[in-house]
Image (cartoon, rainbow over all chains, first blue to last red):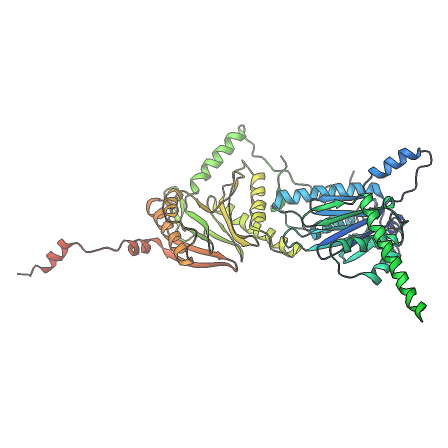
Length: 257
Length: 273
C-alpha cells in the first residue's frame, strides 16, 4: 500500500499549529530551568521538584530523586537542560549525542554549540511536519564552548523547531517571572558570579535549598561539572546573607533621618 | 553494504519526499545495479587492472614554512599513446584548497568538484570554512564506500585553514594519510629522490617552487608516462596562487644547456680551399 499521510500537525484556519502550541503548554508545566552565559562560564540550573508517586515509600522516593540527573552532557564541552516531557527528552538527547560523535567521526572536529542546537531544532521541526507523529514536548537550553574560539554560548530550542542564542533565558514553570528577574538583574558576569546569578533567578520561583535545585557549570578548562548539594547550599546561604545586608542598608538611612 | 550515495544526490530541499521513516535523513537509495557476470570479483579485479596504468603521472605536494607547494606534470597517456600534453592535474576545489589528480581523470575531476560543492555547503551552513581535515575526510569516506568498484583516485588535498597549512593524501582504496611531503603517480619515485634530498622546512616561496619544479622535471625525464608542462602552485594564508607552468622540454635545456664541442669548432675554422 502506498504511504498515507497521517498528518496530525496541520494548520488551523487562522494559521496556528495547535499541536505545537499544546506542546508549548506541556513545556510550561515542566520543571523550571534557567541558563546564564558569562564571559568565561555558562551555568544551567533546574528545579528538582517533582510530584511524588503516592504509594512509594519516602526513603525510596528520595533515592530515586537524587539519582535522576536533569542536566546532561551531550559531549565533553556541551551540556543540555530541558523542560517538558522527560521521556521525549531522552530520545532527543540520545539522537543529539550520536550526532555529536558522528560529526567528530566525519569531520574530525568537535561540534560547535550552534551546530548541535541546529540539529536538535531541526529534529524538533521535522516532527511537526511528518505523518503519524506528534511534536516533542520539550524546550531545551544548550550551553557550551566553541572548540576553537573558546567563546561561551547559550541557545534555546522549542517544540516548533526554532532556536536562538541568548545571554540568559529560562523555560518551564514560572519562566515568565524568571525572565523578568533576569531582565532586571542581568549583567555581564564571570566565574562564581554567573553561578550566583543563575541560583538567584531560580530562587525566585523555587523553594530555597540545595535539595530543590540542581546546578551545572561549564567552563573551558573543566568541561561540565555538577555542583553537589553542599556547594549549592553554601552559595544559597551567601545569597541570603547578601539579600539581608541589602535590606538592612535600605532601612538604615531612613532610620538616621 | 550501505553505499554513501550522498555525492550523487542532487540536493533536493523538499523534505516531504525525503522523509521515509523519520529515523533517517537518507533518501531511499536506489540499488546499485551489479553487472551480470559469473565472476563478479574477478571482473572487479580486471576493471581495476585496466585503469591502474592510468596513474601515469607525477604529482607532488609538501608543507614548508610559508605554506604548501603543489606541483604536477600535464601528460595523459593511454598505454604507449600520449593522449594529451596539457591536462590540468591540479584541481581548484575552492579559493583556499587544491586537489591533485592521479589515476582516472574523470574520477578525480568529478569527485573533486563534488567535494567543492560539499565544502561550500558546509561554509553556508556553519558560517565558517571547512578545515582541510574535514574536507579530506569527506572525500575519503565517499571513496571508501565505493571501494572495490573500480574507482581510481590518488589525490592530495592541500589547503590553508584555521590550524595553518594542511596536506592529506587520499586514495580510492579508502586510505587517508596526513603528512608533510607526498608524491603520487608513476613518476613519484624520481620526484621523491629530488624532493627528499633538497627539502628544508625554512625555504622561501621561490626556493620551494624551484625545488618542486626540479622534482617534476626529473620525474618527467625518466618516466615515460609523465611530461608536458610542470605547473607549480603555492597555498598561503590568503589562498592558492599559481606560480609557474613551464614546459619540461624547455626546463631541460635551462638546467642542462647544450655546450658546443671543440671538434665541431675546429671543423668550421678550416678554410675552404
